[in-house]
Amino acid sequence: MPWTPPSRRGRGERGSQHVNEGRQIQMLFHGAIVVFMGLLFGLPFGIAVTTGWGEESVQAWRVAHAGMVAVGLMLIAIGAALRHLVLGQRLASWLVWSLVASAYAFTLAVLIRGIAGVKGFQPTGPILNWMAFLANMVGILGSLTGVALTARGAYAALRTPPAGWK
Image (cartoon, rainbow, N blue to C red; front, side, top):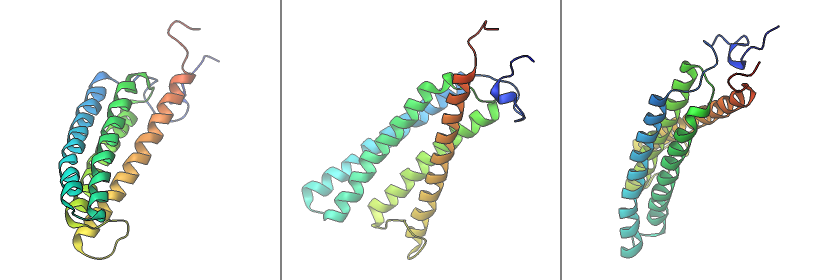
């Protein structure tokens, strides 16, 4: 029996293929935007520290600043590695857009936390807390989906024989 790529083993995918460059550029672009937003969140963080806005506000802006820079760098890192993954185009699209949606959802959640002082960890209280909660849930689900698909694509790449192998 001839060797069959993992993505064709009963999964309905259209062959074993590496993720295309366009999706890689999307990840790099959105990662750069999220890093930029995280750097901008450093401005209110610095003001909160130097003008005594209170520890809770300082903490909120610290998380916004450092967290969004980290999320943006994660998008850039996964985007840089994307061409090595083996996924069908549909799954590659899910990977990219779940991580991009996650990044922007987390950006919205930390911005609401910094401005309104709500945490958004539970679906209770004022409308801004609910908005932050929903943004956090989109961020969590998107991150889990995107990272799981990244692992799947990397595993498929490990199991795909090199070109010319028989």
